[in-house]
Amino acid sequence: MKKVLITIGIVAVVGGALLIGVVLKAGSAVVKAQGRALYSGAGAWSRIQEFAREQGNDNYIAEADRSLKFLEDGIKEWCESAQTWDLDISDFEKMRATAYE
Image (cartoon, rainbow, N blue to C red; front, side, top):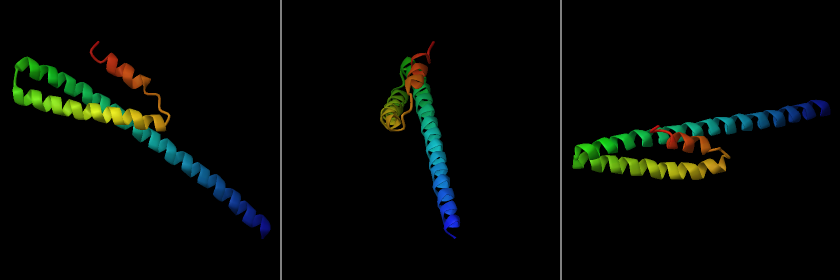
């Protein structure tokens, strides 16, 4: 009986550790996807902002400015939270820097 309980305990500990590992891996993937979406959205709204300024339409300029500020704030928050996940954000910053090239 004692061997069975020890075996069950070991299986429970290993299973719990694997479950925690899977949850952390999935969380990391979600955080990376969120970062990609924020950076992509900011790039798109930057282009929309440029077009709106060329056209001189005040409504479009205001909307583009508002949306871009919202995304930039989101990127800032995401970068702070990415540090808690130990994510390397240099690839995202490199993508942002070379977006217009």
